[in-house]
Length: 634
Image 1: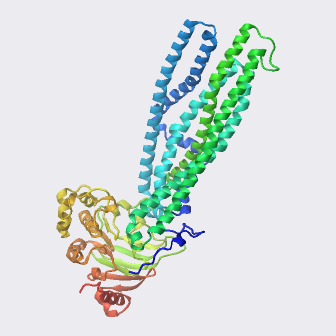
Image 2 (image 1 turned 90 degrees about the vertical axis):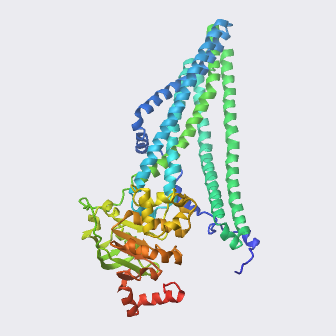
Image 3 (image 1 turned 45 degrees about the horizontal axis):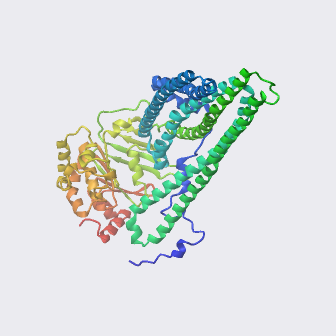
């Protein structure tokens, strides 16, 4: 193999874009999957989100009561302290100080208990709601047809189940109840301060919008900055995972230095997002702290003027000693109430940003839940107990996009028990024919009839119960070989599974695995070879014992020796069933009842293997090519 040395200059060339690099994620596609980060607060959406708590009304209502209680407790604590300092302590009343301290400690204990249960119940409510939501999402996904999955990226679906569901959790367990606690805190604190000194409380109200504006200005930018940090980190981790998985290709094509340069740029981007977020935090947090201290200084100036001069300028004159004591008490109350008041204001502003994120997640989650499953059955669709297996295509046309049909006027008939081979070049329409038989789609023109019933009039469950499919890239679920074979018939015993493998003459191959039929297949079957995976899927189909059988490139991953061993077993599998076999290796379809040759969505030849060879047409030419390539059986 000739190899070219990587050009470091090219990797570092100005203007080199990473958007087309294999190791760089498509940022536009990722943005489409993630959707907008925020959405405005809309009452119908809020009401629907809140309705998720209806099954847990008792838990929710208890939590609401605790939330209201805590909203009163928080400003009551500093009020007791200020009252003790301005009252018994200023009057040197030691018993009063002790009683005030005891009252403070009692309320503090009550507050701690309330806080414990408020936190616990909110976490429980958020968890049970998200659990139900994910259950409903998964159940709904099972009902959606193939058309939905063909046009929707897996990443978008996973995002609905993970990050968007988590955003809803935050909206329910944090935004609502944390905001209520802090709004209650602000209301009670405002009433206390207004009761003690209304003019001085006017100064507090005048300063509140400034704190809110600072938080809104920096809070929205910080939220965006940290989301960019998370997004860039996900690109780094995804690229790392992809690079490790593809290390053989990387080293085989001497791409180490180039990939390292690309990864370095990704890490630099991530560092840049981190620095931007850190710079914003470095301005925002000290600014908030400065403003809080500045307001306290202003409060001391105005309150001190009141105490020393008998009220704010324009709000009073000389005061009696009792009035001066009341003015001093008010100043102490304000000093204790103001910091937590502004803290509650900042928390509410922060929760507003979280609420916008939750609204965006709710929009996407509910949009998925509102996606109507494609209707494949007529209202009065039949559900026969058994299917004979007669399949008729009557002038069938179909297009995944109605404006771009991929099948044109397909007509043929498969009698019960026949094996129909579908042959053609890539893109000829073979797999589409299979999808129509499987009722993953309905034809856009003409009819597909099974036992004389058009597929819309045949209940999907009844068809699937009599249908077995073995594909080229079969999916194995995490579990053992036994578990995956048993998926063809969940009620089957271990002996039934062993019998199915024996019928296919592959039991010895499966028993050679480290733990035999109890060998774990790994994620997506990664612990097995391609051939072993397909043997498992053959056994699954055999165990299911369907009347209709579809083999789509089913032996393409099986080596020649293994294929020869299971060819006779396949005859057992196909016997008595209506079978449709799609294969490029023509040796696997020589004994088919009928061979249908497709080209650009049309049938161009049809007949038995030997007949088509004698005609010397397209099929004969394909067969000669395989003979020359050494692919056909001797």
